[in-house]
Amino acid sequence: MHHEEPSVGLCPWREPEHDRRQFFPTSTEVREETLILSGKRTEVARQLGRSPTGEENALKVYRILNRDQILGAVVARRVRGESGVIELLLAVGKDGRIVGAKIQRLREPDDVAQVLQSASWLGAFTGKTRASSWRLAGDIPDVPQAARTSGTAIIEAAHTLLVLLSLADDGTAHGTAH
Amino acid sequence: MLKLALQNLTRRLFRSGITITGVAVAVGCLACLLAFGEGYRNGLRRELDGMGVQMMMVPLGCPYDAAARVLKGKTLDVSLPLAALTTVRHDAAVAVAAPLLMATLPRPSEGRTDCWVGVDESVRPLKPWWKLKAGSTWFGDADSVILGSEAAATELRSVGDTLYSPETGRRFRVCGILERSGTSDDSLFFIPLHTAQAMFHQPDRLTAIAIRLKDPGLVTGAIERLQQTPGAQVVTLAEMLGTFLNLVGAVRTLVMAVAVLAVTISVLTVFNTMLASVLERTGELAILRAVGASRRQVFRLLALEALMLTVAGSLIGLLLAMAAGHSIEILVRRFITLAPDGSLLSLSALVAGQCLLVGLGTGIVAGLYPAWQASRLPPARALRTV
Image (cartoon, rainbow over all chains, first blue to last red; front, top):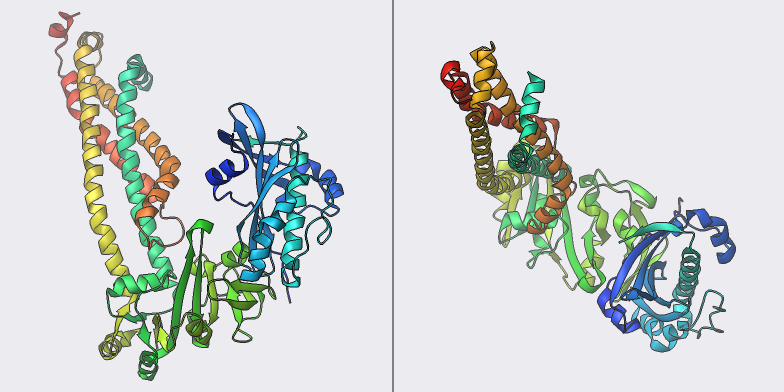
């Protein structure tokens, strides 16, 4: 049987105004950038501990600004959940720490969805950086068995986003701004 | 002469620019309209031809709206009784009758709508474009789902994965993923008919029955018999195509009138520009005559200037149509909810040729009189104005 891994693709930011006000209350505007990371595949692979996928060659970053001053960034990623796609949104401060996390979309059963979207579980992401420890049931609160696959996928996606963002922010990634 | 004509036009750059812009806008509008008409007609015919069915049985109501909704994977507010399927299958002219139950679960905040379609095995001969990208060709059990290629990509599903429907609380196993077909099937979730009926609380109900006849020549008799089915009506795809094209044709005629008006205005603009040019250049043209230019040569010079203006305008108009075509299509699609998939704009060589001809015609019509006027200038009288 031919088994093909589905493509993750770029994930949209679904509620920019609402999320911007929630995560960066003093912000005034958003600047969209698409950064190309294909020149950093070796470093991406080293930091992720695996070969980067084709989609990880580019990262869409929404810079959050208060007039000319950058407050942070918002990045999003589609994740293979146990029962369907999950869209994870991260708000990251300019020091590289997570300011807030949000699940934009998921199709998990109610009990699993409630756990994964709970403030206590997603809230544990706040303050973490790419260098933090991201172990489920250790650094991040454990989840019931039914939610473990999706929970692990979300944690992996959050760490990947932070790695890609930090590499994009080190000044050598090229891209376009809108 | 070409060089002289070009010099005359570039001497009055602003006026020439305005005239060219007028022609460009008119030709651009015309090109978009013609391209839209051709693209829509081609798209609709392609989609209906690809259906593999000649007729649809749908619940009572507007048959064209119902059939179009079913073909585009949208739901109906009313449904057919399952008994209608038995009636259709017993008809002597019917080769295949495939029952369909469709339900959509919209989630606007998430930018998605789950489109579930319940089918049974009889649908397979009607879907000749179904090619499997992965997995098995048919449902293994009642909780299997076959995903269209876009649906699988959107949900990041592979064969063997679970797909959960939060609204109905049902869990499915992905047993197959279809290759991209360019039809509405790409975004659908196909499940067994009985599962769909249970899932959406529609036992013994159907959204539509797709029908293929043993011989397309039997269509008239089949319609007469099947129209007798209580609560149901039958519509042929040929009728649908004709009705849609008539509807679009009526709108197109109206909009074409606007395009004709724009072309007429551009003819008048070119005419005005050329006439003003002749009046301004009376002395210059007289000198041309005095130094030996024939009437025919003066006529040709002015006619050439008019043609150059309109040809330049037409080419820019075509470029405008090509550049703005995609944006116009996005706008148009908002108002046509059941538009065929694929591009609605077909800016073919034929359309481009027609537009260029209109541009040339504009130049000829608008340039004739001013050129004739210029050629009639008596050199002696004209020289007095120098």
